[in-house]
Length: 120
Image (cartoon, rainbow, N blue to C red; front, top):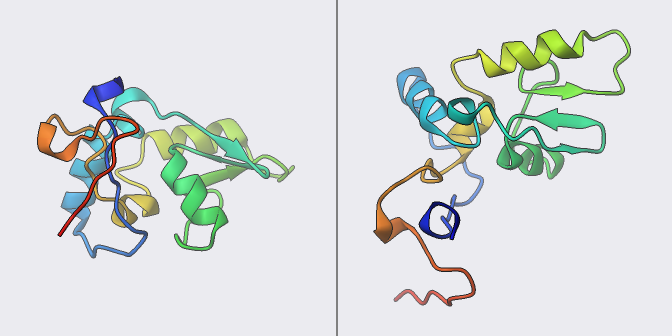
């Protein structure tokens, strides 16, 4: 199991984190800065993480073109510079819309694939 199992990244509500909290989250996230991003692309948008891409495309995360993602169809943009700026930024908008548990080593926050979770 990758990283010891699945992690629930929570709903797409804003958590209201401080800049320092967002920086710490982005810095340790394996989908973000710590591993250089995974850079998924869909519908002309390249994001540093899949949560940012999915949330933005669904209108759940107010990401900004050129700041949080690259628009590959924008012929006026320097895409390499934008990607480097995202990678070198302190955090992206999506960080506030994530549980922050993806890189956790806490086994209580990890779930085995194909295993039902019942709460209550």
